[in-house]
Structure formats: C-alpha cells, structure tokens
Image (tube, rainbow, N blue to C red):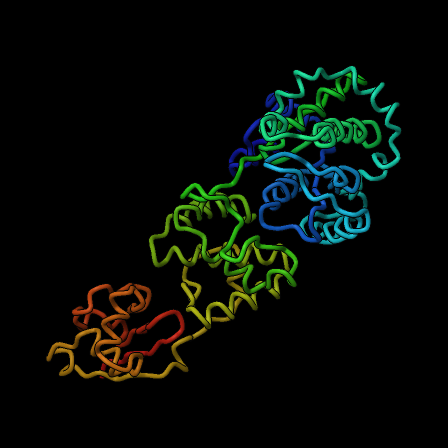
Length: 425
C-alpha cells in the first residue's frame, strides 16, 4: 500500500497541500520527510506520539524520516496555540532537552545505516545572519499574509511580539534548508502547524522552485471532546522518571470505550481488521482490547519486558480481562503464561441452602468479610463499588442465584482491590 493509503486508513490525515501529488511522489520511490519537535521539556509526552507513529508508518513503507529538534527555533518558541508568550529557555536547557528527545525517538524509529536522521536546526539558525536572512526571506511574504496565519491571528488582540511573529519564517527556513541539504520534500505535523508548514512549502518554492508538500495530522480528542494525552496528574510523559511504566500502561488501559478503535489505529501496529474485531467486543470483554492497546503502547515506549511487567502487575491488582488468552490476537501480549488469578484468593463458601433462603448481596459482602456491617455493604453497593466478576451490582437488594456461579464460583469485588472467591458447595 502507498503510505498515504495506510495513514488514511488508520485516521492520520487531516490536511494535505496536494493529496494526489503527494501520493504520486511517494509512489516514485523512497522520499525524505521531516517532523519537528520543540525542546520545551526534557521529555516527549503522549501528545507528541501521533506524529511519531505517523513517522513509523512512513519509514515502514521505505521512506526516510528526519526528526528535527528545535535547538534554534526553541530559542524563540512556537506561538501556536498559546495565549501568552512562552518562557524563554536558556541555551543550556534547550541543548539538554534536545539530547533527551533524541534518545526517546530512537525507541520508535530505526536510525541505523542512515534509515532515519536526527538533526538539530541550531546547526543553521544560531549562526544565521539577520540582515542576510531578511534580504533573502523578507520580500517573499507580506505582512497581511503573515497576519492571516492562525498562530498570529489568535494573538492579535492580546498582543504578539515581533520575536514570535517571526517564528513561522524560521520554521519555513528549516524546510528550505532540509530540502537543499537532504532532499527533504515533505513536512508532517499536527493540524495546528498548518500555517507554519505552508510557510515552508511557499518559501522553498519561491526561493529555489522546489516542489515540496505539507501534511497535517488531526488534533486528537477523546469522545467527550477533551484533549487526549492528559491524566488526572497532568501530562503523561515518556520519561519513566516522570511517568512510571505502570502509570503509562494504566493511562492506555483506561481509554474510554468509545475511543478504543481510534486509539488502537493510531498507537499500535496491529492490522486494522484485528483492531476492528477487538474494538467490537462488548464490555466486559472490551477490556481485553484495552489491555492489548496498553501493552502495545507501553512496549513501544519502554520495551517488551517492561510492558509485560506492567501488564502482569496491573492484572494482579485489578484483574485480567482474558486470563486464558481465549481472544485471538497477533500482539505479543499473548506470550504471557496463562494466569489463574483466583487460585490464591481467599475463598468464601456458600451452600445451596443459603441461596434458597435468599442471600442478598449486602449479606454476602459481610459474610465474605469484605464489609464490616450490612450498612457498610449497602453504601458500597449504592456507590457502585461492588461487582460480580466484571459485572457491576447496583441494587443493594440483589439476590444471589445459582446463575451467578459460572463453573461453581465467581469473584466478588469490593472497591478496586478487595476481592473474594465465592464458591458454591
């Protein structure tokens, strides 16, 4: 498949300067493209991953990525999406952040034998002569043209400095430079980068007649309209010192039901027919799709062994959705040995006579020593903290029947961690 077809099938495409020309160019043979990364922190976070995954697919199709870290543009800061000016970082902080980002990207891309390049735009921007730059680039863009750029227009009322106003020209100069030095013909980026990208395509065309193309990826939102990539504690980082692998795994494991198909398409390499099959599972089996998603995303960021440890740790704490691996998958998650989580659980035995006499759920919670009293048990049920296996019990007067015992037992859960195996004797 053409890389454009793959990206379109998986939902990556938002805007293209010329879709047909881009498709044709990619069909001609291996092409060089780039994506830029701002060194505003010493780690990438989940919000950066959509472009990174796009780079992976393009590289799988034989094209050469350039990961451009902004050691030069980072000294100004991209005004896109900002309501106020960014904090100006020291050169030392910028250089440190660039090195950290380079190391993280090497987990996602193959840099061996020149298959991908890591380049810092500080190499040309920090030594750029201001007068020469103005004479070369200044005549190409009118002030009205620049003020129509979204990053400028959004700040027009609140105020934008000349420093930030000049940012799109510097990013455009990156594209022009990469075209001349490395034959780079495409830039990819988030949809908020459209204005900056088109400055680059126009600058390259006007300065040297180069035919180059721009493509943006969609802004990733959850089904409820909120921004994807945030947790209750803030950004979800790739640096294990900032976000532990277990927390990273849990972020993906807690994906909303309605977002599973979309997120798996973006952040795993599983075939789309498998993603459609897994995401079509009904709760609670849909949790198996979330486990696979979480494992795959964590393995990409931290490696297979670390992802497996996170998967097992989370399963032991919260339960496994498919402990016997009965749901087919091509994911390496299936390599985990079958785990009988119930073997070592404390067991509470109930008789047929108990059931026939009318065994209420709140009474069973007390009998199983999961609650101290009937009133505690009623509050737990009303608050949504009780479940039989993976099915919530919301009615405090729910009565246990023989139908609740699959293969003679079930797991009674109280809250997130407390559980008992209830066995019918």
